[in-house]
Length: 185
Image 1 (cartoon, rainbow, N blue to C red):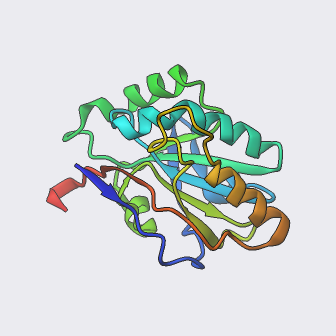
Image 2: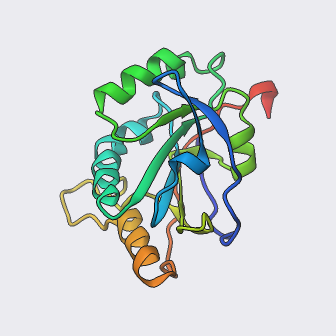
């Protein structure tokens, strides 16, 4: 089922977390955040919307890294309901798309709940102080499939946040597959 994320609540501070990465090491937000900003994206491996943006998302993340803006991906789906999102599948997915950023496993789903994530992809852009400034989609490409110019919405927003300390006033909700919650949440 596809759902839209809401971007009507900006300005809150990113809740801290400690999660295992696909390299089997545990990482904390405080160790992963970027000097000039941080993108946190809730992704999974099976969703057609995530698959459609995976290459572009990785490319944009590499470009943002040049500006000291780090990217963190988090997978929060219940793997009992979605076996294609298992920890091993996360490793395969990251390798297939040559992810240049951590891909963390939120087994308890507490991080997704704390961030109010609803879908994959669900993209959050934080300034250098971890204040939420952007919640939207990576770009206009998902709906713009006919080789027209794609607006680099996430990238442009993060550069504006870095350079001007403010986010664009116009932000488009991310949309994708609903997060597969445990216990029918």
